[in-house]
Image (cartoon, rainbow, N blue to C red; front, side, top):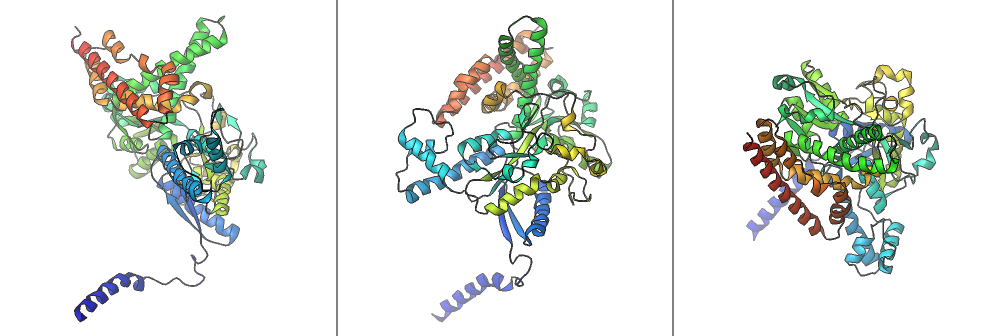
Amino acid sequence: MTKRLVIIAALAFIIALPFLLRPKKRAGGPDANAGTLVIITPHNEAIRHEFGRGFAEWYRARTGKSVVIDWRVIGGTSEIARFLEGEYVAAFELHWRRGLGRAWGTEVQAAFHNGRLPAGASAVEREARAAFLASDVSCGIDVFFGGGTYDFERQARAGRIVDSGMLRAHPEWFREDVIPRAFAGEEYWDGEGRWIGTVLSSYGIVANLDALARLGVPQPRQWEDLKNPRLAGEIALADPTKSGSIAKAFENVIQQQMQKRLVALRAAQPDAEAGALEARAVREGWLDGMRLMQAIGANSRYFTDSSQKPPIDVAQGNSAAGMCIDFYGRQQQEAVSRRTGSERVAFIPPRGGSVSSVDPIALLRGAPHRETAVLFIEYVLSMDGQKLWNFKPGAPGGPRQYALRRLPVRRDFYEQPEFIAWRSDPEESPYGQKEQLVYRAAWTGGLFREMAFVIRVMCLDTHPELARAWRAIIEAGMPADALAAMQDLSAVDYDAAQTRIKQALGSRNKADEIRLADELANAFRRQYLAAERLARNAD
């Protein structure tokens, strides 16, 4: 018995030792009155570091208190969207069962976050939706910071993000000369105040100039340059179903092809009816854009889950070029230049091939630290927060350690002459571009998810077969019949995306999407094998 007591005492001492040795907090020390803020974000460590530090200092000056930010980083915007959906389903189920004493079922689960309930929705579906919008159920997170407008619009329709009150608190910020409602077809803030753009994002090509010289390839200037056969196996890409930013880049490729087709058709048929020409241009441009994406995908070395990986690999020489969001490309360009003195890495915005969209910020429903969350949103949109995006490290009011190399959303930022000396990119003027791609939401905005799905089954799921067919076609001198076989996209044309594909992706039964993906991938594999055979047998 004594031996057993000694063992128990020893174990208790071992468990207690870390707590006994832990430094004691001093009363009134820096963490004694610290507030907490929980933020979910796809932003990288540099952005998290600078905004965490900047807000802590701003918050202390404003309130006299300290704040600790709990950053939740689980992946890209698409992963965050799936996570939030799951958390709110669990939270609302608990509220529905225990708080309202109602029976839970698939009908309630499907309806409560459906912002587009049909007119014939049942009484329980309407009740579930109304109960969710009237509730303060929480996922335990305060702020959603960063990503693309597509995912924020989906969160707004679902009711998972709510009005932060910023439009009413600072009406002077939401004017054409500060943060315009929209620019070049892109919305910059939600009319109900549920999400607000904080920083601009454009898309382009990151290139390793040494690798291009080795391959005998000139520096790319347009998206079309990435289909150069000499770049086979040299392009770094990200999965558009995992990364909202890269999906937006791919949408830019398709939108530009649609607009090019419209210009050509108007020139060829000046007397044709405008609506009919536009409808034709959209359908033909969709196929042109998808074929371009197929060729770029055929040249790809890989499709990664992380949009941060391609520019890193290009900088290291593992790939010759890649597609990325602007600031990832600029950061790698600067890092290589600062570290080695070399200018071998370049970020190239394609002429007329990229929009300037926004990365929004939003307050989540049931935010446990609402007051602090609203202050964080205010800070990010204030000129104090905007300076962090593009000031040089060490500049007054700028970042301390990292040059973020991003373009602030506030138009008045670019009109301050005293800022020019402190800016990382003083030559950039996003509101004054001469060659600006104008986004037409009616063309592809409702097919964003369908577009990413098509590219996945066409290029990712079938990449080995696609790459082999493409190499065989290149080696055979680009025979027309083999190329036509590879580029037959009739199964995923614009009308198919609007009907069959949209229906499968929107089905309540997720097996419908899986079955369609499997069917289309198998069809593309057969198609690519046939194209490879035609190329091998070409004279």
